Length: 92
Image (cartoon, rainbow, N blue to C red; front, side, top):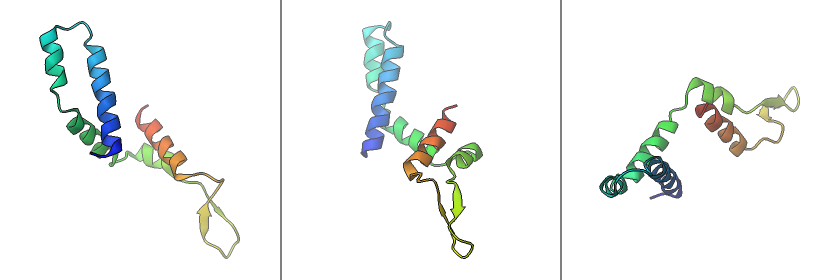
């Protein structure tokens, strides 16, 4: 299992358990038997199909260095910053 699948599974599990804090012991046991890794993998796979709004949010600004040179990523933005904007858009 990848680190990201593990992290997402842990967050899903925590949210589910927290949301059912007043349930019986039997119901809590059932919640522990859910395949959170599969749920996490499905969520991550779905994020691999970005919406149009996510794509627009993730586009790097391009600037021309000279009229003869091709466009290059501008403003010192990293791919991580772009990716975070895409995820932020998806969570709106």
